[in-house]
Length: 267
Ligand SMILES: [Zn+2]
Image (cartoon, rainbow, N blue to C red):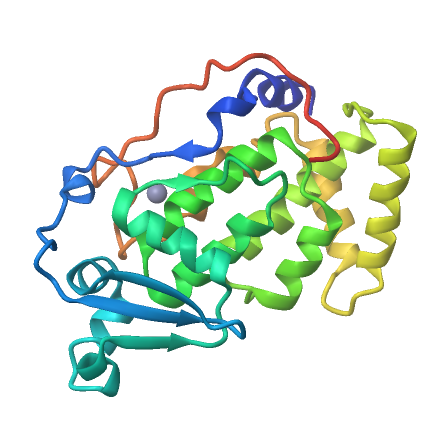
């Protein structure tokens, strides 16, 4: 375990670096489609009916969900108005940002919720490239900051078990429990108390398996060569069957050379 602690700190990224992520060197992702002449579609989002507009061609090119609903003779295709009553306005704003600028930017967010909600939307919309970029962003964030019990709780309530986001959050949470067990944590008494109160609340949830969590934490603790889940990018990516990042030429960036910094307890 000692060696993985070392790796953890060595690879910690400075804060300014982990927000805007681009994993792809695949030029097809960077091509700007010709959409300037395309009609404008209005998206009406959430209970508050917040309205966003976007070029129809861009929505269709970038998002399988909109490709289906805007090209099949539906009411939406005829009116260029799509209602998304169950979605969150902030999250849809990130979606618009991604389809226009091809990046993931959570600079102002000091917890994982915005990224997690965006991931859920990316999965619902069938956007694997966005999912993988959000996954990378979450991994960098959770290498710097501990996965909080409240984040795990949200995942258990909102994300299905086979989803990579569900797997990463639970795996990283267990890995970090081993870190705490070894005292490799910088945090105040208050932060520790809040964390443990959060874990107590989590253990009350039916969907959370405390025994599995402890078993996994012990496994990480006993394995001196354990690699933290947040460093195993492609393990939590989604790709067409048989493909990986490297096979598609979407190689990872080189080894992080960010400042050495201990992992933080809170955001
Ligand atoms: Zn991958």
